[in-house]
Image (tube, rainbow, N blue to C red; front, side, top):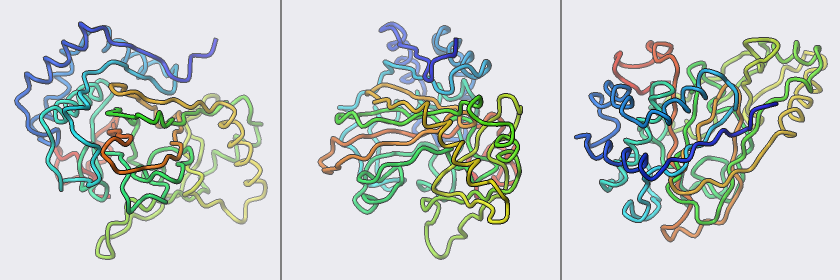
Length: 326
């Protein structure tokens, strides 16, 4: 029997209280503190054992392409209104800092948290909340335009192995789209075509900060890679160029889309839900919604997680620095 698209773990009240106490015991003012980050995996060892076992199964067995931990101690009322200002320009309540500490601790069960210098002021945790200036864009801070399913940061060789989405609030029950590739629906010819390194993956506009900042260039590679019988996936339908001189490539990509879209599900996250996506196997997106900017909008915190921090060492300032210069 095929594993569920999203594996589920619901915390008991005792487990939630334990996690809350653990976060409160940490004398840390920000998750971006390098001293905290170097010890996060150690403190993660104090998370409830059954929770750690669940996350380890998700990481090691590659059964479900996504998993959800429900019931985390997220006090959305004390965290205040949904922010309309992103990055370092706003202060955070103690309850919000604790929620971010919890996010990093759970993420550390899967790998190391990292960020991008050109995204969200280089912060390690991104606030995905609607901003008026992005209203009609397909960015995570947009609203009126849906976000097509995609691999996160498909253009970059150091992209996340896992993406975490911690829900602070979602009163309108805006669904997150999750899907995976059913490789059995692709012919051998399509598989071979999609495994050829002839596709150009481009960054999305969130990486464009100003004319003074270098915009990261595209990356050329294959859509499918790894084990040919059960391959990993790299695809963003909005930011990919197909080779013009390769016969049959458009048909192969069309078959790929169909082999993913038959498995799409729509999941409405609740406050205290933490959704983890295997970025090599799952695609994700988000439905459109109407933002009113009254402080009660959908608010999700995004975390990028790598299984191999050393892979990006040449793009970071030091071994302990977690921000990729792009």
